[in-house]
Image (cartoon, rainbow, N blue to C red; front, side, top):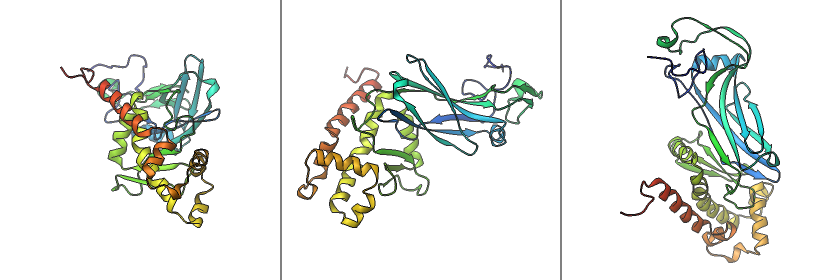
Amino acid sequence: MRKTNINYPHPVLSAANEDYIDCSFNISLPSEPIIEGELVTLTVAYELQCQGLQDLIDSKLARVVLYMESVEAEYRNTAVFDVGEFEKTIQINKNMLSRSLQLMGYITSAGDINLFKLQEHNSDLFGGFPFSIKRGDILGISKDFYNIPLENYDPLADRPSIFSIRRQTERPKDEITVDFVSHDKITIFLNNDVYESYNKLYEAPETRMFLASLFAAPVLVDVLSYIKNADNDAIDSISHLKWYQVIQARISELKIDLSKEDSMTKIANIIIPHIFKTNIEQFKVVFKNLMPSGGEEA
């Protein structure tokens, strides 16, 4: 067995090498990026399966760092997770970016470590000798790298996204639940299996609008039905929420009277123009890209 990562003299947790045994480190996007005015907002989470590195992070000897870059705009920046923080929201002025934003996760040393030796290190590669680590040295590299397009990713066209898709933690047996009375965004919770599948598919840029519409369309119908049938007290309790204000503004703009409408599916298709047609068209694109023959029959 030989050391596969020749860029660093010390062990680095990475999917590209075997420096660690039964360990992993990765970043993910729990919800789609959104743009509001001059701001691009990203929510990024990380998962680390390595007790030795986690102990270093908890003791502030190491830290989880996000590296962000927009190449054409010559934008480079970093963000650091606080101790005990596994999900972080980042806002960037969109005028500082161009076309796309690259996102990578790292674990770096927060100071000098004279005896860097963890039980998770691969002894076949490194033996039993400790390493000297300097401040800023890379200790881990996330498995996934994100290239986030900054054009045409918002399923609500030119309006701020009012949906957030998250992992279900409180009711893990429910495949999907929706909360539209507690947050500024309509929050769609997916259980672990569904969320993992969603998150994996979301990595491909061409699937993102399709996935967003897949969940947004039926949930919007549900929300519109709630608004139509809710009494004044119920409406007052949600009137301060941003998602309600966005939808209500759109309803007023289109001069729609929900009380006179029978089909909320039809209204959803008007509020988000041609959402069902767009969903089908995006599915055709994704299906064609996934088929080896381009989706055409022989």
